[in-house]
Image (cartoon, rainbow, N blue to C red; front, side, top):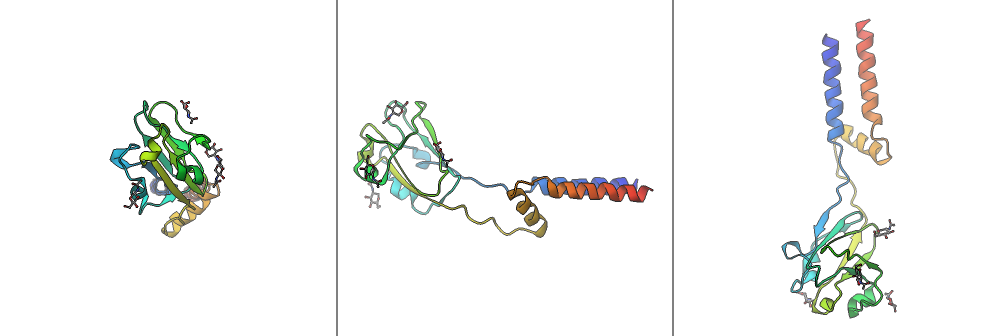
Length: 170
Ligand SMILES: *[C@@H]1O[C@H](CO)[C@@H](O)[C@H](O)[C@H]1NC(C)=O
Ligand SMILES: *[C@@H]1O[C@H](CO)[C@@H](O)[C@H](O)[C@H]1NC(C)=O
Ligand SMILES: *[C@@H]1O[C@H](CO)[C@@H](O)[C@H](O)[C@H]1NC(C)=O
Ligand SMILES: *[C@@H]1O[C@H](CO)[C@@H](O)[C@H](O)[C@H]1NC(C)=O
C-alpha cells in the first residue's frame, strides 16, 4: 500500500512536469491593436518597441469592403505599388492572418489606395529568443521536447517507479 502511494505520488510528479513543459510561445499580434488594420493609424509607431520573432502571427482585422492585405517587397512598399504582390493574404472575410514563418523583413500594404494614406507596415522578424532558464528537471525535459522526444523523460520516471514498486512488493 505504501508502495502504491509512492508510485501514485511519482506519477503525479511526472504529470506535473509534463504539464509544466515550457511551450513554444508564438505571439499573436493584432495589427494596430484596438484600431486594427485601418486608415489613420501610424503603423511605424505601432511597430516601435515590439519584437517580432520567427513563428509569430499577425492578425489583420479590417473592413473587408474597403481594405486588403497584400505582401509586397521593399520597393513596392515604399512606392505603394500593389501591382505585383508577393502574397495576397486577402480572403474576403476582413480577418486575415499572416504566419511569420521566415526570419526576414516583411512588408504589408492595403490595396485600393489605402497604402498612400499610411496603411502599410514593415516588420523585421528575428530569430526566436533562447528559451528562459529553468530548473534542471524542466530544462532536461525541454531539451528532450525540442528534439521531439517529449515522452521519453516521463516514461523513464514511470518505468522506474513501477519497477521500484514491484521490487518492494516482492
Ligand atoms: C520589387 O519588385 C519590383 C517588381 O515588381 C522590382 O522592380 C524591384 O526591384 C523589387 N525590389 C526589391 C527590393 O526586390
Ligand atoms: C487578392 O485576393 C482577393 C480575394 O481573392 C481579390 O479580391 C483581390 O483582387 C486580390 N488582390 C490582388 C492585388 O491580387
Ligand atoms: C510561409 O507561409 C507562406 C504563407 O502561408 C507559405 O506560402 C510559405 O510556403 C511558407 N514558407 C515556409 C518556409 O514554410
Ligand atoms: C509616423 O510617425 C513617424 C514619427 O512619429 C513619422 O516620422 C512618420 O512620417 C509617420 N508616418 C506616417 C505614415 O504618417
